[in-house]
Length: 150
Image (cartoon, rainbow, N blue to C red; front, top):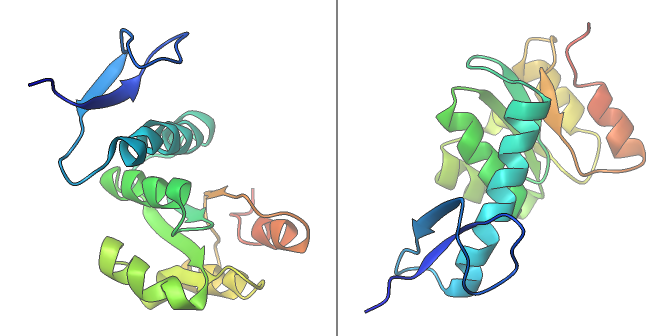
């Protein structure tokens, strides 16, 4: 029986390749679901640790915490000892609390700039060290108000 795997390969878009990284696909995932994992985790890892250079004890605001990149970023941030703040729509708050053991003070509203007060209150007015942001317009500008002053 062949083992199902997912992974990342250089210069490849194929069903057969020589992967740089590969992992067995859990029996609970379809091939299609497993194919999404490398992109969201690599995107998150690159943003948090290569671009933002975050280290244990620092804080991050992750917008869209219930999306693919958001969930991957929360998981990676927590595994590296980062303090996580995130946003989502009201119906998804409980999911984030259950899935990632987040507290109410760590979850802001993704539909308005109310997340700014959530983050500032949670950080004692200091703000976060980095933000993983996909917002545009006024909410993108509001994200800047959540950042640590340099």
